[in-house]
Image 1 (cartoon, helix red, strand yellow):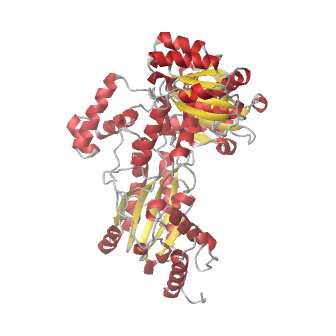
Image 2: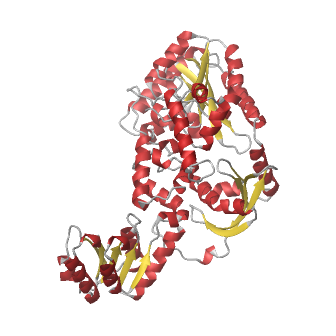
Image 3: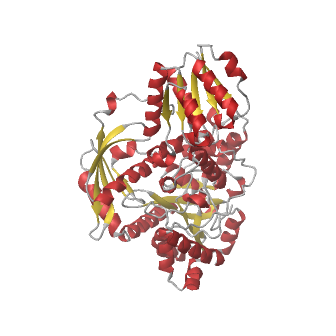
Amino acid sequence: MTPHEPRWGPRSRRRTEVAREFLLRSTRAISELPAAPEVRGEITSSWRRSQLSGLDPDRSPLLPHDPAREGHPRLVHAATPVLERLSAHLDNTAISLADSSSWLLWRRAADRRLLTGLDRIQAAPGSLLAEDVAGTNGLGTVLEVGRPVMVAGPEHFFDGMGDFTCVGVPVRDPLNGRLEGVVALTCHYRDTNEHLLPLVIDAAREIEDRLRNSTSSTERALFDAFLRSSRSPAIAVASMNDEYLFTNARAAQLFEPSDHARLWHWAQDALRSGRSLNRTVTLSGGEDLDVRCSPVTDGTGPAGVLLTMRPSRAGAASARSSTVGSTSMPAWDQAVEAGCRLARAWRRIAVTGGPGAGKATLARAIHAAALGDTTLVELDLAADGLQRFACDRGDTSTTFLIRHVDGLRRHESLELATLVERAQAHVLLAVDPASVDPTLRSRLLDRTDGEVAIPSLRDRRQDLPGLTETLLRDLGPTGRGRPPRCSSEALMALMSHDLPGNTAELRRVLATALAAGTGRDITVDDLPPSHRTVSRQGRRLIALEEAERATVRAALETSNWNAERAAASLGISRATIYRKMRVLAIRRPLHR
C-alpha cells in the first residue's frame, strides 16, 4: 500500500478480495496454505473457524431467528440511552447491541437504505450472528476472540456481507468480568475509517459504567468479600451464588463451567446453616482441593458464599480409578474402586442398580481396571439366551457381562443361578433388584461372591456435572473443536431434578437439548420443558408455584411474549412480571 492510498481504499479492497478468493476457494484447508499478508491474522483465523463449522462462503446462511428475544433487562437498560444518543449524532451508520450469545437485540440507524441492506443479509433484531452460523462478522467474531474486532468489506466470510464494515466491542460486567454482550457500529465499506473503533470502545466503556452503577447489594456484598480474601495469588478464591461467580487468577485456572454448579450445590449447606464448612472437593479438571466455604450476607439476608481453596493434602496420595479421565465423579469412582477390589479377590460379582443407572458401564469399567487380561463377552439375555454362557462358563480367560436378567422366565432364572454358581469364568452380573422377583433375586445374588451397587443419580448428585461432561463428549459432533458444554444455570436445573431414569434419562435430555440448540453450549432454554421447572434458588418448585408459573407463562404466550401486555392482562406491573419470570425460571422459547 502506498503512503497516499487509504487503508480501506479500492486497491486495498481488491487485494483483500484476491487473497480471499485464493484462501476460501482453495480445495485445501486455510491452515495448509501459505500466509496472505494482505489479510490480518485474526481474519484468516476466523475464516478457518467458519470453514470448520461447515459454512460455505458462496451460500447465504439461513440464520436462526427469534423475533421475541429481548435480552437481559439489565444489559438493555444500561445500553439503550448510550446507543440512542450515539445513533442520534451519527449519519450513515447503524448502531446495534447483541447479547453474550450473539443474538442481535437492538439496532438503530437514520439511513433507511442502510437498514434495508442489513435486513437483506439478516442482520436484524432477533437474528443469531454467532460465528459458527454467520461466519466472520463484527458481532460473532468478537465473542470468539473476546476483544474488539473490525471486519471490513471482503473480510466477511460470506459474500453477501462484503458491502459493509462492522466494528464490534465486548461489554463486560465490571464486577466479575463476564462478557455480557457486544456493541457494534456498521457502515458501508466506503465509509470505513480509523475513527470507528475508538468511538465504539468509548460507548462500550460507558455502558459498563452504567452496569457498575446498577449493581445490586447482593452483587456488591459478594464482590467485596471476594476482594478482601483474594490478595494472595497463591490461594484460589471465589465468591458465588446461583447467578454470579467471582474468581481470582488461581481459581479461574481451575474452574470449568460445571464447577460453578458443583460447588454451589454443596455450598448451599453453608447458607442454610449460617456457618462455615470445610470439605475436600474434586473439580472437573481432576484436582482435589481443600475448600473452606463461608456464608456471605448483604445486611438483609444471604448473598452467597466465599470459597478459599488449597491443593488437598490427601489428594496427592489417593489413587483414582475412574474410566472418564480427569472428569470428576466421586460416587462413581468409589463404586469402581469397590468393584475392582471384589473382582481381584473373587470370580462372580453382582453389579446392582436401578434402571438406566449405568450397571453395564460400571461392569465394563471394573473389567478394564481389574480384569483387563481376560476377554470381555457381553450377553444380553433378552436376545442371546443362556446357551453361550452354558457352553463357555468354564473358560478362565473370559469375563462374562450378563445383562437383562429380568427378561428370563422363572425356570431360566433358576438355571442361570446354577450356571453362575458353577462358573470358572469371571462373571459380572448386572441386576436391577426391583425388576426381579424377590425369591429369584435372592437365589441369583446368593450365587455371587460379592455385590457392588451404583446409586441412583438422585443419591449421587455430586456426580452429575462430571457425568454431563462425559455424555456431552459422546453426544457432541466429532471433528468440530471442543465438545459442547452445559452452562452452570442449566446444570443447576438438572441437579434439582430427581432424574428417575438415571443416566439414560440424562443422556436423552442432553441429546434433546443439543438438537433444540444451535450446536453451541446448552442453556436452560435448550432443556426440555419438563426439566426447566426450577427456581433461581436451585430447588424444585412446589405445587402452588407451579400453578403460578403456568398462569404467568400462559399470559406471556397469549401476548406473544410481550412482557408489558402480559403484565397488564394479569393486573401486575412490568417489573413484577420480570421478577416472577426470574424467580419461576420462565424463559422465552427460541424459534429457529
